[in-house]
Amino acid sequence: MHKPSSLRWRLLWNLALLLVVLMLASGLSAYWNGREAADTAYDRTLLASARTIAAGVSQRDGSLSADVPYVALDTFAYDSAGRIFYLVNDINQKLISGYENLPPPPPGTPRTDDYPALARFYNATYQGQNVRVVSLLKPVSEPNMNGMAEIRVAETDEARVSMARSLAADTLLRLGMLAVGALMMVWFAVSAALRPLERLRTAVEERQSDDLRPLPLVEVQRELWPLVRALNHFTERLRVQFERQAQFIADAAHELRTPLAALKARLELGLRSSDPDTWRGTLEGAAQGTDRLTHLANQLLSLARVENGARAIAEGGAQLLDLSQLARELGMAMAPLAHARGVALALEADEPVWLRGEPTLLNELLSNLVDNALAHTPSGGNVILRVMAPAVLEVEDDGPGIPLEERDRVFERFYRRNQQVAGSGLGLAIVGEICRAHLAQISLHDGEQAGLKVRVSFIAG
Image 1 (cartoon, helix red, strand yellow):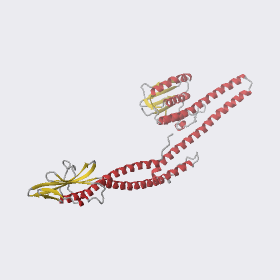
Image 2 (cartoon, rainbow, N blue to C red):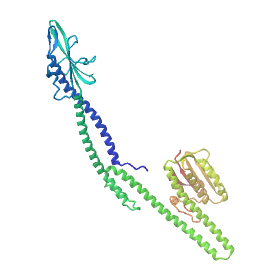
Image 3 (tube, rainbow, N blue to C red):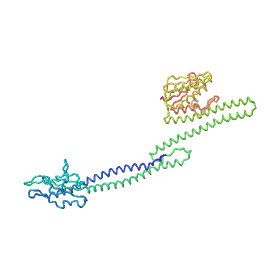
């Protein structure tokens, strides 16, 4: 069996994953923000170096020359581990000083608006290294020379990357400390929130097996009240079921004890006699008593089947059935019994009547209703089995009927209003249970001529 996961650990794991994702996103954001900040800081220094070099550009003997002071290339020395490259072109883009092939600005590179200068910043690759470059234009206006000289200064990006990584690492460190603190707080908060469940578990475990009292609501949080109410509702249904089973066992034991005692007494009386006729009468009486006991046992088993069938219906095991067809098959099966008792059994079911139900239980219902009607109908009488739309079943007989004041009691287990009529007192009780399982309504009415009419109204399929 798969071991269930801990609610506490699952919550912490999900929260930790969320925090890791947030930390990664924050780290990437911090890196790029740090890179932008580094570019802003170092671009200013790049531009200052280019301006220093531009200040040393002058005209000599009809051509431009560049006097590059050392300070222009030493500006980064105090905080940069990278290298500095520069280039000076005259107004004809001819190299007059610096490193050859220093990349020019890509086409369409805009001029910066951050500084009052004719400068453009861009990224490039030089000698296999990533560099940040500034291209500064210096106006040249001389009697024999007029145009724009260009000064380029480039710096490798080690310092910028280092600064961005430092900012990202600092951000991740702070977020990591915050995440650890948050996880610890969540751990303690969840542990505190689960204490009422632990108390609830302890209270349930410490109870005796027969203690089905409701659990108190005052010791748990409001969010747990629905759970406790559901448990209380379940235990209440369980308690009612146990009481019904206990009462049923007591009633069944009482009902079985009397016929068994009578059967034993009859047999003992027969054994004391030496007359064969007495023996035969004793055996015949014993056979009849055994038949009654067998019928009672079958009725008890039917009650057990009703409970299993009701559970199957509740779990979605109902089938689409034709009630007319079920009544027709049951009528044909019960016809020999009706003929033996001198009772006419008629069926009125012309059209199919569909409903959703459990076939075994519905057959049990039909059998008990028809058997009960045959048992109370005198010889020469009539029993009518009627099926009507939308989903109504009626069983009508010519018997003595049931007074109004007793019609509710006949659905009680082991209740028999006429002790002279053979039976267990469970037939209509079983019918009532089957009706409840199918959410059907059962009612008793006076017959059209005399006797009793039992009407069962199902939910149409």
